[in-house]
Length: 457
Image 1 (cartoon, rainbow, N blue to C red):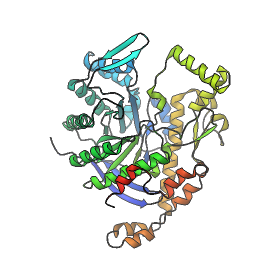
Image 2: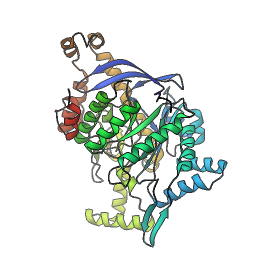
Image 3: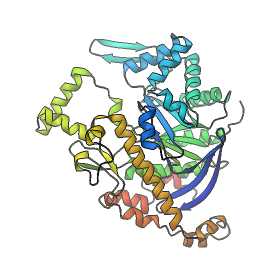
Image 4: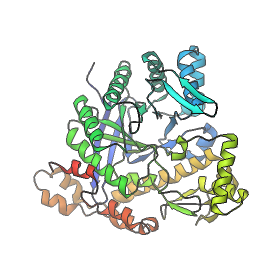
């Protein structure tokens, strides 16, 4: 196998601490295009090109990700059938439907990628119980994965995210997991000139993190997608992210590591009864993300359909002491909150503190439009934060960065971060001081991962 090539060039523009915030130019060699990071990626799931263009027409470079979590029997069955029984043209067309891609939108963009997560080991027989018994999905073999990876490669114009398999609580061993990663990289590398990103799950044990990153270091895998698995970017996971990044920086020293965060829970501890909830996804820009990918709800992992959903909803309404219709209204508002960049809260539409950017009913009843509207608000805020950082960075910081090895004291003095005041003035973070503290003045040894990450410092 040829040595791993990241197919990415990285140039540092500015680096600040407390909050940790780094601006870099990242060039995709396959496209000969450069993006300034942190960079917000748009959700493309079930979005047609006309709607997307209407929202993003003023944005020069647009990056879209479509993600799938193979959760229920029908998803497993359809994917396996497409990879074993369908003819070439039929297979590709239906895989496009499986990933909910609008082909016209995909054709119009330079930056696209797909993210796929298996909650169970696809290399073993999958047993999925239902009311009538147990249904079986036979194991995926190498041929299945070759066709799957070929499709993912063809649709991922910017970079390729290696399909992930959930480790915690799963039958797959870490050894078999790393064999899966290596085999995917090997297959993709046979025809590759695109950056390949290998996954690292956010909720792994310390031993798993250390073993996987040691393996990645040996293989020189420097493009890593941090799979949040629908976890939120709160004080606990911020500490985990910080420690993981410390370990990455110690183990993978030979290249500039590029981090792609995805499958992030949208809000901090979302509650159907709350009129506003602190944003989770936007906080990743202060926690090492080069690319901020798509959201994922933890409820996506637990599909409930038809009468089962109605029964569940009625039970929740009773528990809350409200009518079924009131519950449905509350659930609709909860699902389609809108991001407020001035406070970092997601608000119910009927409580939004500013004029809505679109018609109320459209934002509430059309999930795709709501996702794109939030995507634009998040994109604009990340761009605004970058600009603020660049305009307010002390002029001697860049010189200090270059002279870091010669004079660390000057580097420390130079890096007085103007972003700290910016972050501390956000109402959402004022209301959550522990999260604010983790961002602006992180406490050491917050977790066992922190202990591991600080070894040798």
